Structure formats: structure tokens, C-alpha cells
Image (cartoon, rainbow over all chains, first blue to last red; front, top):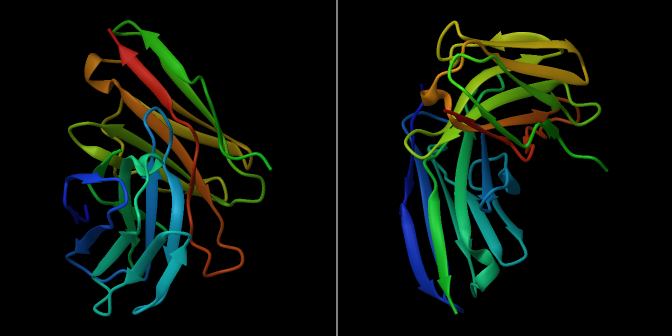
Length: 111
Length: 116
């Protein structure tokens, strides 16, 4: 199946720092989604992107749909302890409604 | 506003037993997805339905796995017979094609399956 490369795999940062992570695919997507998963819970949708070049914010989170349509980026500004979790990207190709997920970025925020 | 509902939340069973996982999608959603999550393989799509019809089951591991969606508000994922390597968290998610381009998926809380 489709492979999404997500990086970094894990991050350890100090509270208050900004965070950046990205996701790349080998083929074009027409939708990118970013999820956060807390331990013992299902993924929760953070941001959805539908157009190349689109920049969308949700509070301290900002995500961008790459111009090439093969990548997406998520930034978290001024991190806080509750940002801890695993962040997943997901992409949908041009056909069908099947989404492919990245391997996740584990974020640890040190108070 | 109820989200995706899954039951049971936890399941412990012995190898060889039949396991049935249940899902109720968000009302009005016409797509339903079953995923499996493990540390080794991450999130894997097993099967998805559109309007109760299976569209792509290429992710179903083997014949021991089967999924049904008898109506728009209910789906099951069955494993028979179960094996220890089936231990994972199984998620159900739903989405809607209405109001495009809203192709967003909403996940249930998951069922944590342990096969001894």
C-alpha cells in the first residue's frame, strides 16, 4: 500500500518551544489530515487540508498542504504539557476514499 | 453529539476463540472504516464500506477476519479463530461524502484486544 514517511519519529522539547513535523508521500494526495492520539484513546482530528498551498490554523497549531501535493507540515507554537501525544498525518489519493496514515511523531513536552 | 461508538473497549480471549468487535458510526456518515494499530505496524486499514457495501478489503489479513455492515448504523469485525498475533487496538472510523470537500474521518475510542 501507499507509504507515508513522517518525521521526526520522536521529539523531546521544553515547554514553550515551537514544534515542527512533516509528512511526505511518494504520490499525489488531494487531502491531508493531521491527528493527535493520546494514550489509550483513538486519534482525534486536528486539521484538514484540501488544497495545495493551503495554510490552516487551529489555535496554536498550523498545518500546510505542500505545493507539490506530496507533503504536508504541522507546526505547534509555544508548546504546553498537554500537547504530549502521538501526531499522525493521513493522506487521501485522487481516487476513492481510502486514507493512508503516517507512522506517527511522538511528542514529549518537558515542563 | 455522539461520536463513533465501539464495543467492547477491552477484550481478553484465548487463542482459538471467536472475537466480535462492534461499531456504530456517526449518524449520517456513509463511509465506515476498520483499522488495526500495533506498535510494529502502526495504523493499518483493514476494510472500508460505503453505503453498507464493502469497497476495499485488501487490508484484511487473512480469511480468519471478516467484516459486515448490515445497516447504516452498525458494523462488526469478526476474528475466527483468534491468534496471539491478532492482539492490537482495533479502531472504527466514519466519514461522509456529503458537503464535499469534507473528507474527514472521525475515530472511535478503539477496542483493545489481547489474545492469550
